[in-house]
Image 1 (cartoon, rainbow, N blue to C red):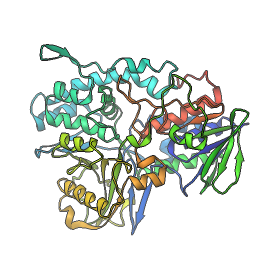
Image 2 (image 1 turned 30 degrees about the vertical axis):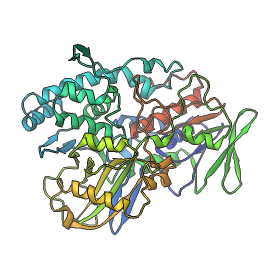
Image 3 (image 1 turned 60 degrees about the vertical axis):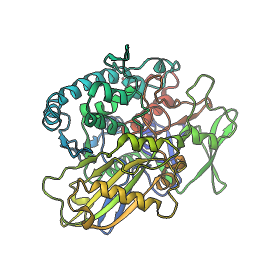
Length: 503
């Protein structure tokens, strides 16, 4: 039985801890804050409750597998999963609206044809067929297997099979997500649907590779799910599974260094000067591991280099406590698209200027657990924004001014929103940084294969006994990816470098 120290209690870390404990190891999780869950936090006040991280779950099979592999109780024995239908309502800049059914291609085709005109549904359906090809080509290396030693093959060819497009006497295929929108979807509203799927993951649709088409495909193929009581309940269930498997948690324990002995990781040191020995250390992303083990060569020559966390965007979340009941027919999620998506994204890229009219996700769960009574409603607004290192969210009035614009945008989706607000709380990338430790409060994107894709460093480092888990390591950010990260780390610790992933 090995002693394993896990730094942080995020979803990937807890997924690894539970699996390692079942394998017979003694696992201790050291978390610098006073709670678990990483970005899956909950704000509670005056009988209202809000998810301040992801609002919905895709690929629930990842967490079903975790519960199957770590005990007799299934995931659905611990939480109630509800398939959201419609998957989302979209409000476009020109006033057009469409509600897309959950995991129903025929329903989506019919809805798009009715709202956007005949042929729109077929173009979107054909796009999803091509997106599935990209998914089939990248699913195992990017989700289910440790990062290949010859990872550069994932950078050599765009896995999305773009349609030939003739332009200026040349025939080209889409290699960027925005080119799919312009050349294949041929409707600014369909292009906005595609762009939103990337933006929701913190991926800039203007620079994202065409392989980011797998993101809307995941939602279409596997559905989007809500956890009754809020997504925070998923974190609670994973935490309780860890406790049931005798994982020990130490909260308020800030790890300041990784102890190295005889060339391998041998424990952790804390801010109060104490230390704990370990045979194996599972740490956070590589960018922060550098600070915990300065001077060490974490990744050998030819490995995927760690990217600075603050080069990726963050999120602003506005929690709204509303007077008045949720109106009949209200949907769980509405996407209010920016009036000038291209212009706002261009500002975004130039020096971290926040968009004037952002795309806003409006989450309105019909869940009595989140409101004091039937005469009130809790609503969460989310927008992707520059990280705190790109924009000064602490400047006087900066957060509130942007929140005002988000509320104004959301007013297109929620009747009488402005008059219904009892109070609100605004959370910026500064809050994300405080809770997760991510530089600037940036949100890690999922791994995407392509010549200009996004790949994260491997879970195994060049330091024996030291592994990295979570969104800043392979396979990147997103709730499903966090669960797979934990599975990969556990496999590598238990089986060694010969581990080749789930079967």
